[in-house]
Length: 248
Image 1 (cartoon, rainbow, N blue to C red):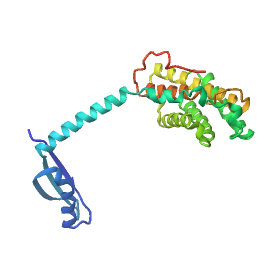
Image 2 (image 1 turned 90 degrees about the vertical axis):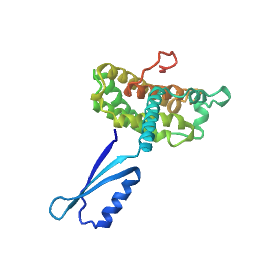
Image 3 (image 1 turned 180 degrees about the horizontal axis):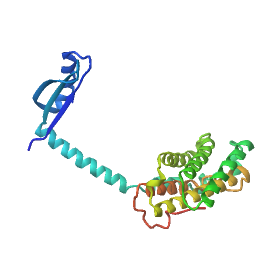
């Protein structure tokens, strides 16, 4: 019942000492039971090495694989955002900062807002005018979110919302839309549309009209909706909780 592994090394222009050094790098994890030098291609000696795993190492590997499987399963199941993190993002009344107060310390120039409006409109058109979510639409939305990140990363006030958007951008940039089934794609599109709309209104309330008493009103909702999108992509079961889906 021993497990064996055969490794063939075909070095080029290597001395015997270099071959021995290579074997010694592998050998500590195995019992070397056979070493057979053969002749490969012209002027390229090959080395066939037959190892068997130590019984102790086999047991350790088995336990390690069980632990990794459990960790992967647990990680996948715990896909919802940590509740304690969310609670810290629902700022108390005494911590709230109005848009007017915030504007005294931080502002965004009109050209930046105009550029953001343009690419945001492009994303909105792609999401509303196309029946199905396409890779092109995903790329446009990711570009829009990156433009928001350029603003958010300029101030520590929006580090939570910047983190949420950055995580979503990373997901979108690696996503292959064809890998989502039709139902998941529609749900994914609905969440993306809601997030883009929320950010558009957030931008107006804080930087244009300055008519909100809490510049952090969107933070927790956006964070959790971004996490829900991640769950959709990872095929994680989404619990039916009235607090989970929260668009403004």
